[in-house]
Amino acid sequence: MGDISIFLQHLTNGISLGSLYALIAIGYTMVYGILRLINFAHGDIFMLGVYLTYYGVVYTALPWWIVFLLAPLLTGFVGILLEKTAYKPLRGSARITILISAIGASFLLQNLGIVIFGGRPRAFPVPQTLNHVVKLGGVSINVVTFIIPAVTILLLIGLTYFTTKTKTGLAMRALSKDYETASLMGIDINRIISITFFMGSFLAAIGGILWGSRYPQLMPLMGSMPGLKSFIAAVVGGIGNITGAVIGGFILGLGEIMLVALLPRLSGYRDAFAFILLIIILLVKPSGLMGGIREKV
Amino acid sequence: MNEKSKTPVTLIILALTIVGLYLANRFLDAYQIRIINLSGIYVTLGLSMNLINGMTGMFSLGHAGFMAIGAYTVGILTMPVTMKEMNFFMQPIVPFLADVEWGFLPSLFAAGLISVLLGVLIGAPVLRLTDDYLAIATLGFAEIIRVVFTNTQSLTNGALGLKGIPNYTNTWWSWGVALITIWFISFLMKGTYGKAFLAIREDEVAARAMGISLFKHKVMSFAFGCFFAGVAGGLMAGLLGTIDPNMFRITLTFNILLIVVLGGLGKIGGTVVSAVIVTVMMEVLRFLDEAIDLGFVRLKGIPGMRMVVFSIILILVVIVREKGLLQRTKGRELTYAKN
Image (cartoon, rainbow over the protein chains, first blue to last red):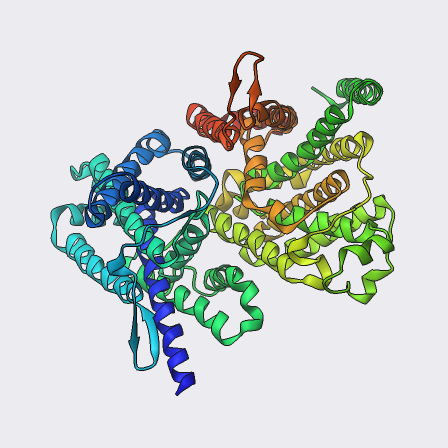
């Protein structure tokens, strides 16, 4: 009995971590789908989302749920701003060039974070509603562990509806399929790219808020590891493919938690797990599990 | 320019460097000497990364990892036996390394070779990936190396790091290695291998059609890059005397990337100049992070400001130069190939 309940606990932890990776991975995969760019700064956008929420809750009189909605919107606009300043001037130049710019943007955000928010870790103000423990058949689980996958699934349904049923979503898919032809068909590329960055950053900020509720310690560099891992999740699932990003996120989250749970001796290698998985996938099936964009080699 | 008219220029530069270093050692204080040492090391690092990224056109972000390998090799090999016992108090060091105490030169060589060995072993499978994927995969390797070094307590002393590494590195070592690197890479780029590297950078398909083995040349370029990165890491260990796994985060790779981009992808001279400038600026701009005392008013320093400035510089350089980043070198190399 004890073993099973512990296993269930690990399972829920893995699913909730996986959902977080999935939320961030969607942003990577959407941007990559259209611009063929690894938005290195995406993890730092995620960090920004958490900090905006923190300041909103701590320093304004707004109720927490309004802040939880406003902060992601604001983060979305920062995402647009990021694209306009760091990526747009480089559209059409060599991929290495734009990648370097992305790395520069990532470091800029991290260090701006250190300058503005300070290097000391802060505690995320988790609302009471999200932060109590329930007992389910001998397993005590924090409510937020259930809320995370639920929110993720809701957002996913919304996103799927958006990309498959709306005109903007159609334009997005067209751009991702064939950038040049789509632009000849009268699609407003700048608008679509802005929307893509907005949505990616919005989702990352929601992921950030949930992350903060689960692991309530804020640091300006907190975005880089989850960012990299979520990118790996996107690659594992097949980059450019939203369903793939979610599947990759779950594989990564569950894998990480299970590695620590089942092989405690290797727990120090937790951060290496994602990268080893990435390299195996790149060697065995570079297009990812769900078969994303096929790269010309 | 043909070979004969170039030799005196090379000799003059060499002589000037030697005189400069001699004078520097006589008249400058320890802090300034340290900056000169760092500049030399960063010249080596910048060139080794430029060989991989600029000249062969692969986008590798694994430099911090290869430096870590080199730094730890030198640290462990040169450290006196008694010092090792003091360092490894949590868990004794593995027996076969316990009584080892090598000189600096063989240790540096070992640093380079082990870096090549591990670099090629883990790098060869992923070198066929293109830009972004290669970048993430090599970044991943650097992270894996860091994680492994944090966990192998009896080999690297884990998160505690190594203290009391003998300070062998002086200006002669750091700039000696830098000069050798400059010479070697110029030499390499003049030969068939160098031309093959450039061909791969310009157009992989065309290069392959001309009978250039992509795999062989990519691995070769990567291996040379790893070697010099490892040696530079070793010099760094000998300069700082203390190393720990957290030193070798991606920030370090970022600094080297900044040097390469500022100096120009594929350019040797530019890299040397930008390595020196960036290293000096890193120190000069330190005032941004620390408090400034103007006598009558005390400005509070803001930690992180220095890196903000550098990130902005990087983005601006990339945007302003845009295509010139790659194309200007292309123009030069076209004339280069005619010789």
